[in-house]
Length: 126
Length: 493
Image 1: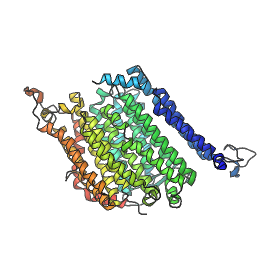
Image 2: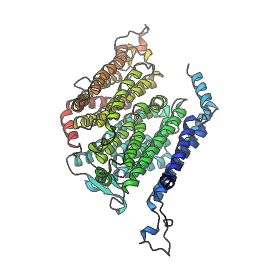
Image 3: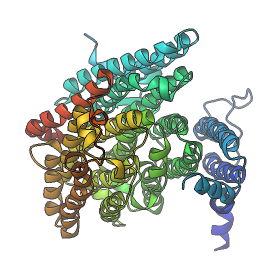
Image 4: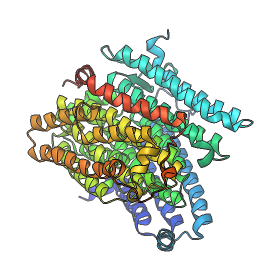
């Protein structure tokens, strides 16, 4: 049991962060905090991928003169890292769009609090 | 002509060059954006027709990018199913973009360049999702199309940015779930290539990570497809977006999510392996069935035309997903044919609602009366044809896809779903005949005949809607060859 917990601690940690992110985007009323929750959720997945690539006694997947490239076991798996570079870019783009939308919402309703926002929307539409 | 083997790479190239051209000419002439975007979509549609004719009855065409052979490199796969979806997406988008010529100055004003660049990026994302043979590449294209659609939806009514924001939050959670599912599959198989994973799945389909991956991917894609309990973003987004965006995104956006379900459920996992441990396909089919009834009931209770059409989308996507989840050739053929039909019907209906909104300044159903028939005879004829096809009366195309779906439910022995299909047709009849009755029978109170003068929309808006209506009749009569062709594509285990 203990071995199982220790051997998989990275995954438990990922699940914890994921739940934190989901909690943030579901229960926080402020739109900025929702985006923070979204970002935490994405980071959890990124950490999951990166922890897939790890192995004991290996170094970062950058070519190093002392370790020949043919020794595959001496390097971490580079593929998840490169995938996650793309995923980080996607996450940044999503947040950019989210903030742009928030500016548009603020300009129209002068609030970013969801409850206030829904009140003002229902005032708009009789 | 173009070599078929390099054809898959042509789609992104066409769309990216179109986008760049729109942006570059837009620096000086922003009115050129719409013609260029329409032409780009038109050429992409022509290419997809050529591609479909080339691969419909032949081996799939595989194109490996950058000279890296799969499974290491990323490949685009063009087979019958992807060719079919490409043709549907690109031709419907061409007609909608063409139609937008009559609306663009009023709705978009000075922002035309950015808008049409975004709409081509949306098409790029959708085309890429359909073509790619790599799971992670699919995620990237999914996010490209989603980001573009958030932007397109946020231009609209006062509430549109908030509707787009909600869609962004929900949609990104869907994308993240999909990515996590792909991570599980990668951890077990060590590859991201779909064909490669499909070869490994039979041995490992009963292991926990693969089942988790399947659930996560279905949930993530289900959010994008607005599958029943996860439909919340859709009605808000389609109602508050402007008329062009809702006509562009409603017919094709959710279809591509359904395509991912086809690709991953039937081609990567295969009908046997999906259900090996958990009753995944039955669960999806029942959720879709509940969604069909729920969407129809909600559509009946709406007063706003666009909102009614949005809920009708929730119901119709249920048909498609249910057909896929039946996992038999009839359901498969019905689902794919319904993709075609629903794309045509929904775009026709949204084009009509755009015309009404433009000319009358509202889309409130309770204010429709027979002056609309006199003012817009062509538009209302298109609406009638699309509505009757939506209900599923022969000889229009909508009947035949529902017929195939009903055969599929019988084949699967599921009486619940059979009853759902039949009763949903009845509910569709309720909410469409309600409008038809108003437009053709309800006398308006006004005595002033000048109110009911013929004032049809300009031909650029009328022609695409008429083309769609004629296509519905044509596909209704030509249903047999299309259905035969689709059934050939059903993956044999």
